[in-house]
Amino acid sequence: MSSSPRRFALPQRISLSVQAAAAIREAIKEGAWKEFLPSERRLCEIFQVSRPTIRNALHKLASDGWLDIQQGRRNRILSGLPPTAARKSRLIGLVTHEPVSHLPRIPYQGISEMRAHLAGHGFATEILVCQPGTAGAQRRKLETFVRQNRVFCCVLLSVSQELQQWFAGHSVPALVLGSCHPTVKLPSLDVDYRSVCRHAAGIFLGKGHTRLAFVVPSSGLAGDLAGEQGFQEGVEQRIGNADARAIIVRHDGTAQNITAKLDALFNSSHAPTALLVAKPEHVFAVVIYLLKRGLSVPDTVSLIARDQDYLFETVNPPVSHYQFEEEEFAHRLSRLMLKLVSQGSLSLEPNLIFPKFFAGGTVKRCAG
Image (cartoon, rainbow, N blue to C red; front, side, top):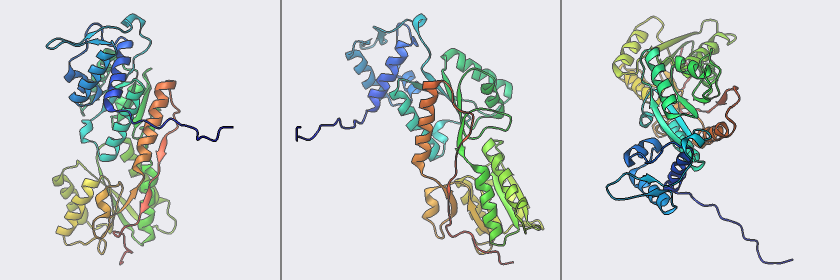
């Protein structure tokens, strides 16, 4: 037996240009384009990478004999399967109600990692922004996008109940990045907001608070609605707190509207002593409002943030909030999508992440 050490292949970091080249090559093989490639600018939009990355990818494809690149002319395809021989589309649709660049940091990073993994397996992604509007207009825009691009499957980010129902009733596979509405049966990945908000209500009640409020956007999104349900359940199902009351304060996300809703709340006879606040940016808006009103956190009003933000642990006192490993979300999303594109379907059982509670310093026993 040889005593020399065995040689193992070392892990390789695949550059983005190599992944882009692989995705373009697979699209050519599937017949996405006939004689010429789209412009560099259009390819940047489709594959969501920079122009230098696309340019490097095109030069690699040219050196491999896939393209003929000539200055001032369109890039000609030299080989690949004709459209009639295409097996199936390798384009993934990313359907969202706002530009991806507007997403919070954690879902944005998860989407970026997912797209890189899909590109490495020869799948391109294209974004469709379905801004809030009439259900019919959204549905027509979606149908046109899916048909014209021969979309294989979709990821749905915070879309309306109507769009979720469209996918549930059609043959295009989809993964909801968020929660499904009660009447919709689709695979999904989200934070377990119902359990989180129920848990937060329990923490407040355990500290003697009986007047609780949940400050949440009036988004109509399934995750926010599930959170409202969980918060109310946490109060209603708690034994020994018959006098406790949970109020849902919905707002449109603007500072002016948040202030107006909080004015009405704190000017009422049931002003809360504990607040659960959704969305990190709204947490700071609420804290500033309370300070202007002369209400200190946590001496007068206790506060928990439903979501996480790295700033919460850098302020004094640290904001009590729920947190989970950012890598867990990204990895689970990538695994689910790779499974979806390989198998064509996923289990309808929701994939839920339950964060840990970071106690912080903004929850205090109620003074009475």
